[in-house]
Picture: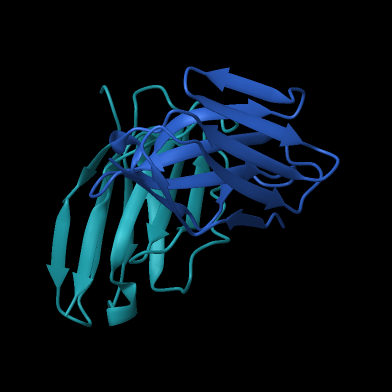
Length: 113
Length: 112
């Protein structure tokens, strides 16, 4: 597609429920990233996929967070047993190659109540 | 790993004035330094970038300078306009990492 697409744009969930956030990167981009942006804060790195290599999960804040990328394209970020501190905007970006500018999606605003 | 510091956190200028945002980084092996602009409710958008083999790069009213010895880089916006109002993020790609590390952002307000 023309840009990075994220869905849903907004998600409200109850504490303790699981959520899945989806990212459709730009076609042909081999690198895909997830970042988290809390209110008024910077971008916190979560996870990075590059081609067929094992993902860099070093930024995931706890084992409740996981992500996968199927067929080298679409990625899903899953948060299990959501907590109020998980409330944030989750941003996905893709690039080709990793040291070129990222194209970000508009993000998913997650609110845990 | 890489650490990026960004200053100031907020900046207010009059329309037509210049704005300068500064960042420092810690990893001397870092070789790619982009700047992003984020408008309310949108994802960050790349506005300019610079690589370690270049000292300065310009694109119309925006320019970025890089001092590898001092490990700092700056964004310069000239003739600011109200539509330049946004949050700006600097970032660096460390030598041992595959992902960008971002500064905490600068909220720029341009007053008409």
